[in-house]
Length: 348
Image 1 (cartoon, rainbow, N blue to C red):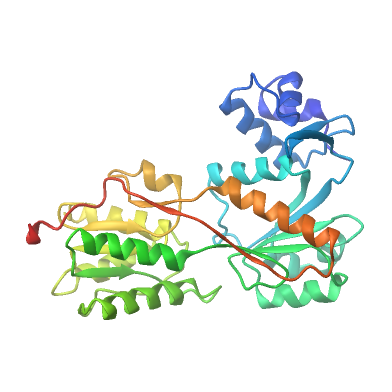
Image 2 (image 1 turned 45 degrees about the horizontal axis):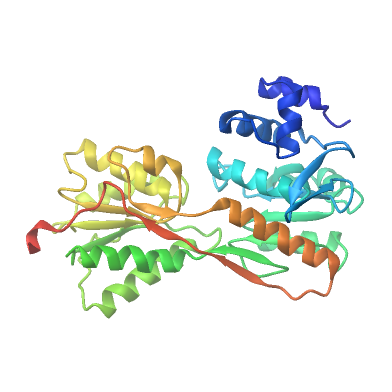
């Protein structure tokens, strides 16, 4: 049985009237209250009644007219991109605005290990579309066997199977390296990992190698240590430890992910390396923790509301036209310059 509006209000710690205002996209609701309501809706799987309305395309529509039940499949625990509140809530709000209610959010390993659960949840009678964060080959094959041809599916940062929303991390690498070069850094290192999940490390490492070669810059031994897991909170520390063991240290680093940047920076600071005075640091990706870290870590600003809007658009186009060709949508990003980077003093 679906949760009620009153249960959502209780879970969010607000009044039923406030929940109604959020669902109908009405004013006079604080940002904090709105976030609590959206999170409660997501967790409880709340489906608004036929009388509920949302703002869409400049007008209002009933959720019952054109509403889609959305299933979200994420990677195994520890590899999930949506583990930070700001990004998750921006997506949830975009889904609700677009007339989509998330009916479940499960990890791919749980679904693939339990055949009964897989067939129960991945049922066209219960779900109208799927959004998949990083789809493995095994999951893709299982879904191809289970779902009818033309079933709406959008993947995130994975091969363009049905439709893909893609954050261009390669362009982020280019922007990060160019910025460090403009600051006068020539001894630039890279903190990456060996991640078999979807090849992110290989792509970013290749961008690093190409840039250094293009600029005629040497890469000393130990400047690009690898190992560990892409989103393991300790990987950055292990990589930074390897970096400190090198005879000639770089003056700047690009970290392959926010998790690596934060744990790596913590290790370096604890071992007497000042950021940015001794070493400038840029993180690939967008994460609120980058901004809260001391010093705040230069990273990238990505609009996850836009990510959600594009997911909704692609899924609806697929539903209206099952023969709709696969499309990749690249999400723009900009370098957010914070406190972890500075001009290389040696070239002043």
